[in-house]
Image (tube, rainbow, N blue to C red; front, side, top):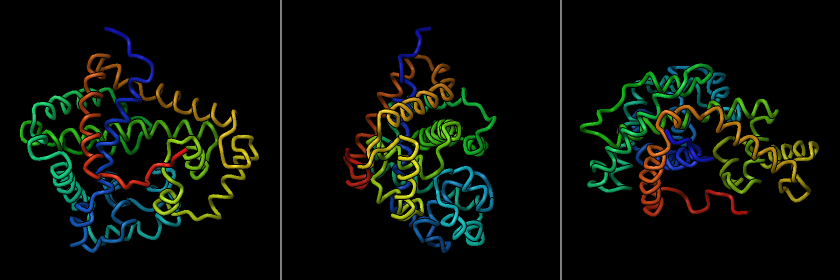
Length: 290
């Protein structure tokens, strides 16, 4: 079997993650949850992503999400489970995925041979994931796989969720090893030019400008950020090492799929993600421009 090219798994994940993430910006999600009284955007987001864990408390959500303010999480969790059970939220989530992908990709695309092929490849890759020390992945792995024969777009989204959370759990381990706290991780990622716009980070993760400035100062004290809020050479090297370590911890799914399979899945998922982006899946100012 041909060895994987450098960063092949990361590129595949990025394409799948872009497709997966369309849900979190879709009005369909709020529409599905509002009848249960879950209509605040933060409540919708927190309930949707944490539902696979069950009716957990704020501490579990903060720990597993890593980069959300605990104060924000505690405003909505666990009270959100009084409005709707995790099972109810998961059913609403899947309905929202269905309508979102149909709207962004088109009716023909969601049932196309390419979607079925991508779903098969992604599910095969997910067989290489490891549960140990990966709570969000493991919780999602307990969920039923949507039927590939009748709903390949849902099976693809499910597999993308597994691969996303598997990499994310490993990335948290790398962040802890680098001694970056929740907000320092976000600030340094944004400074690298690959993260979200700071305003989006603060709004969605529950931080304010004072929190942001304090994290910048902590990073500057470590020699990772300069006076202009840009990464220093040490900071750039740290972010590079973080991604490489995450690649290493996340290599098994893509090694299982093999170089040819990874290349094909990246091609298919990338095309779907580009179509979704062109259809307006994401806000224009979402990504930090540096």
